[in-house]
Image 1 (cartoon, rainbow, N blue to C red):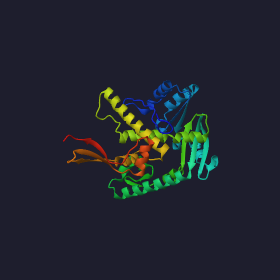
Image 2 (image 1 turned 30 degrees about the vertical axis):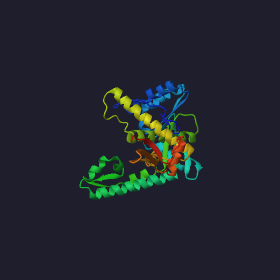
Image 3 (image 1 turned 180 degrees about the horizontal axis):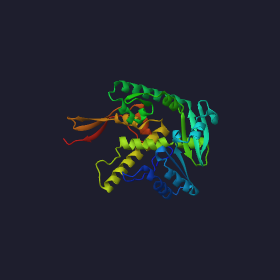
Image 4 (image 1 turned 120 degrees about the vertical axis):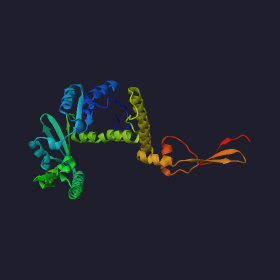
Length: 314
């Protein structure tokens, strides 16, 4: 769990073989109890959009639980898809950005269309198709590409072994360029709903850093207490890193964790030993602007004046 600024607040641990969809309700209830929160708006991507989870969340609505969940727009009923794809059903917010609201049964679907996203979707598809054509021309077994979902949606089988691009599928896919939607029962404005969903990247960023940079996976531990200790250490490290990143952004400017690391790693102190006087000196390196401002952000003073570390006995 993180704040809207990306600062970590808490975490929960579940057995590795637990389906993530089954962690939802226990996690929400525990957060509610632990932090005495009056209103909970749960935000997640479409991976947790199971019918059971939605029903459970709706069952908790009377207890001030609401949800904003990424929608699988292409999987919705045909009549609803036609409405979503009709730009006349959208309100223009600004140039290249519009929002539409639809009902899927008793559920509210908020869909946004962005021109920038549409251009990116078209570019990504063009690259994927170019890559697919290259693979088909080189492959001795073209049908092996049918197992790849990213490729399969653009292919059609001709005869027993020949594959070719399905222009109808490509055109159908292109109609969805720029669209993104969420399903919600939250009683707030459309723009607030989409803004809250966009804040999800803070949680995803936390997962990426802890998983890759901090190696949170306890691959060398088997006993429950050791696994919990390992994750606690990783969480503490992540909290410190994010707090540093936040203070630097607040007092200086936005720097990524990696840029902060690169700035700090260059700060060194060389040790010089005078054999005649038997004195060990410290010679601090010069600091570049970013490093100096990082130190200032956390209230640490550092001089580049040489100093005596110790005087050794003659």
